[in-house]
Image 1 (cartoon, rainbow, N blue to C red):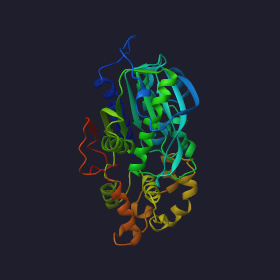
Image 2: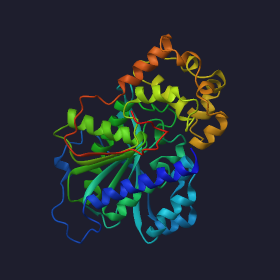
Image 3: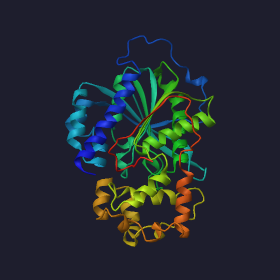
Length: 375
């Protein structure tokens, strides 16, 4: 990904989260914003967010320390752009709470996961915004391990809820089920349930029980699936005000076919993590060693599963962006047994063509996006 693409990526996402605030028609929270939601009357499905660490962040301090754009910079290599975009927030403060909750893994078994909640220091908010983060590969990049740029929305009077996803945070020892969209969406939904009793206990006052959803890249497709499952399976548990989805691979199978047809990949590290993610599926019998080049598979524990390296570092370790040097020969042949299984798993994670959102869904996609091709 060249510099121009990196800047476009950041600019688009800043526009999306900015639009979240602007379209919601509230920039400042007055002392009295009306009645507040009693979350004890809403279903938590037995979930509870258990804090294990918290901190009040000053944007001035984060900018001086270079910490605020940490996750941005490590993923897309644009520290200066991210810091410049945040400079106008220097006087703002946000309360961050990191915690755990129980969700399910790809086989439907209970598993402990983690995430972070960000809220205004005066504890008064209009809405809860559930943000699904974009593709990361290092554990230090996830919301519970850093101070993400999306937390900015808490300065505008919103409770911002961000899951780490499985394979990060407290579940870092597990393989991240990348693009296993149903299970990842359930991980997000379970956190949305778990924060309700937490908000009541903290006396964090929220005016509306209608959720705002948002996500970019992997977060874009995750947010789309969150809305799909909330509307299909939990229509009485959640109200959705709107959803902002940016640059998402909503149909992983079509994205894979398109990427496979290219000579090179703009984000080489995404190719192996897609394979590993599909191998992590329910009762999967896929063999990643049959789909990746041998030297890549042999380094998989260190390069990918250790969660030590960000995407740029992994791309350097890979030493190539050529698809035929990332994937095995069999991965280009649809009739090969392992490739058939891969395609089936990818298709199982496509957004259903029959899905018609009930709540407004705003979809953003760059016309020059060669990282996630338009289906």
